[in-house]
Length: 512
Ligand code: AHR
Image 1 (cartoon, helix red, strand yellow):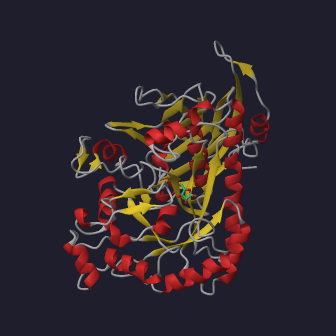
Image 2 (cartoon, rainbow, N blue to C red):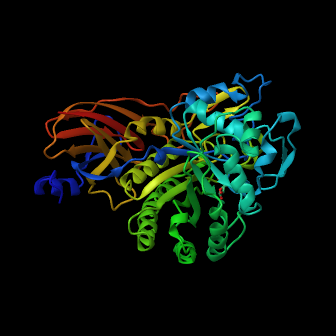
Image 3 (cartoon, protein in one colour):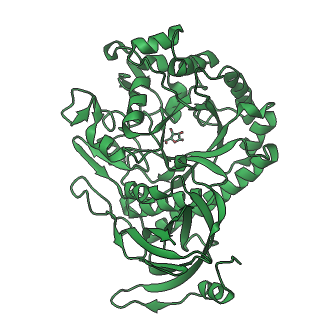
């Protein structure tokens, strides 16, 4: 039992206190959570709130990149509204894929736009792309929104030389042919790209390899990725699909020198059983329940890695995650491949994901939501000149204050149940940030956080909530689901807040 929680309080927290709230048709249950601001779990790397953008559907072309001559308001070809919404929200951005990455040849995307080849995107619909969005455009996008660039290299159909040349082109200061070519193409300054993945899903679209075959290629490729210039590359190996321990073991057993690996990236999607706006209560429960499995996977994959890397020099990433609902062919036709609407339920899913990443802050170094615009679990949806912030956008915005703080231990009596309260709390100096998620559809929660010896001097709160789990922000009604202020009681050693069913609340507490 945590120091912050007395025996009586703990017993009370375990018992469901049911009582109908006046005027509302759902019951309210009280939950008492012990927080120990001095019991540290680990630093919440800002990269846990990362994003992913692939050449897929209208994520890049038509979404983020509209071209300089577009009638959509733009900044040198980037959709202006997207830049404004994303600025400061995205700590790290992974590009160009996804499956696309292992069929992408970076030289196609440099030099004068009109001279770039027209290539076929064979993974995502065989459409022809003009390569007007390439490495320079990606790095400039990152600079415009304040994100750290993360490049996924081509292993499946590429060569070690192609990838090492890309790194030299990006990072070598000057004087080599490749760095001079970069300067000639507009950037005398090196790009300083730190994060490099060596392939994507190489157990599938990245070459259908066995873990042993991939480890063999990984060893070859990374031998030549030594770093060019001042930026020491952080080299990321392809990890498992979900909690596939066979892949992870096979890879690490086949690696002779672990110092060639800085990161190991798993992918974990939460499938939806219907089109996003047609979920039933059962579909919601089914999908939201997957986040308990993701947390278990993080713990188990990290434990497996600890067997090879007890000092945790290799970081675990989830560089693709999010809800993947049943895609409607009509919507895909209209808005692009893997387009889906984002609802209040999707936002709760996003918050469950971020909460679990933060609780496991000692085990995870990065998480990238798939994908940032118009594809799968998007934070922005666009159509011609329209650009809408989805409910998930607001979850990322609301949880931003956690970044760079230290996750602290929480004693949550609901933690064993995927349908119970989800909480994460972080602290830096005298600021404590708490995010609570109520994933239940028919029960409100009154959450009381007991701070032990720490004292609260005041708090402010924000909440994202809609009683309809299929509620969304459409192009016609872009502000249906937006955050609001939430009253938070804070005094002495307690902080209390109320969460209606299906809500995400963040309290920022000043400690004495
Ligand atoms: O995010 C969509 C696709 O899902 C990615 O291209 C691939 O890596 C994954 O299977």
